[in-house]
Image 1 (cartoon, rainbow, N blue to C red):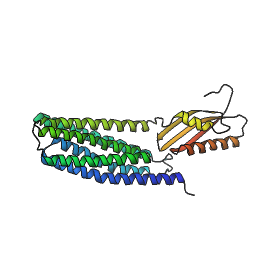
Image 2 (cartoon, rainbow, N blue to C red):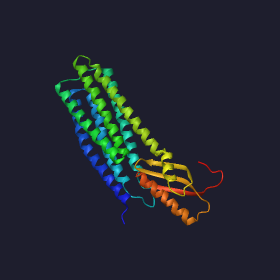
Image 3 (cartoon, one colour):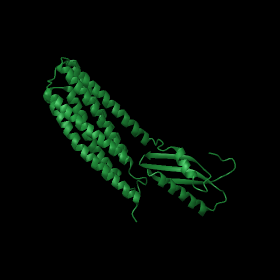
Image 4 (tube, one colour):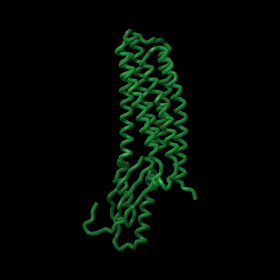
Length: 299
């Protein structure tokens, strides 16, 4: 008999991968347009934004590889599965952001130090406006897919692309300033781009750290309420959760009458487990420790 949860997980990974491939193509188009025009016009703000967009494409590739590894079923060497490879892929996106941050800062400082005026024309605004529209569409589509599929990887990638939206707006404003006789705004805009990149990187790093450090994922009171609704459960404590919103590991201790037989206590624990997994689809595994209720025990 096939496992419905395993089939659901496989379907989820297939959908996440499909989203990533579509976004990869769009990001490559955006990055190519910005970098090519940035080199041609000499605008370091556009060039920096292009490098930022290029890391979107690189992170998409890393994410696709991460998803391929994460969807592998549990085995003897990995009894908890391979789900954290998706989290590691999110960490790789953070590394790409750091690399591009260094490059953008270097380019911006060099322009401010040496000076220079880029060529600004109507084509500049057409290129930036077009790529901005693509980025907005990508953020909307990927964020929506991330919520629907409960994927921190898609959410991290959408966060990365969202920073592109703000940087593109900054670059457009800088190009207008250059056209009005303020060439220094080109270098300053590149510094602002660096700020947005750093902010996006921090958000991704914090999310990855929470998962790798096994930060709690669910509210204890919600889990306790469901467990106590099962007749025969007298209380529960030592509730612990870890993982990601769509792949949660839970363990808890529940109190029962001390005169229950081992068989009845075991059966009751399975009722609690089934109730919890039905109520919270994100639960991947539930381990319940049975304890006899004794005088003085309290939650």
